[in-house]
Image 1: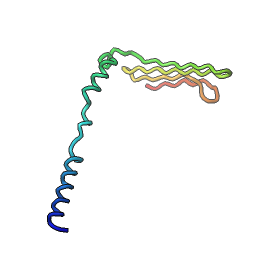
Image 2: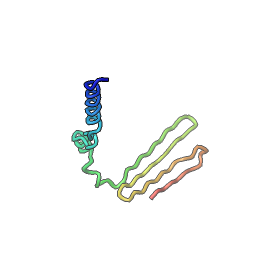
Image 3: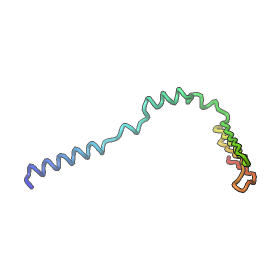
Image 4: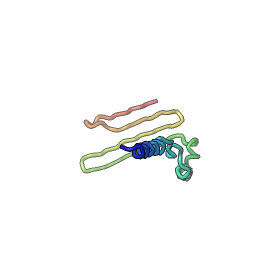
Length: 94
């Protein structure tokens, strides 16, 4: 390999290292993401007392019901439903 060939190879490797080694802009939150979050109520998050979700499904011969409650301020989470064998299940995490 000639000196010119080695120099060109080293120069290319240095350029590649600089391009891929530089910090990415994806590490900082995008302004559009913040705007979307605000549109969907991020500023009101502190006013939320609880998030409740209930799922009910009725299929001939089968009734399925599950309820989750999450209280973000206290960190409490509760679940009510039935296990696969049909026994009632109540779970709480705080």
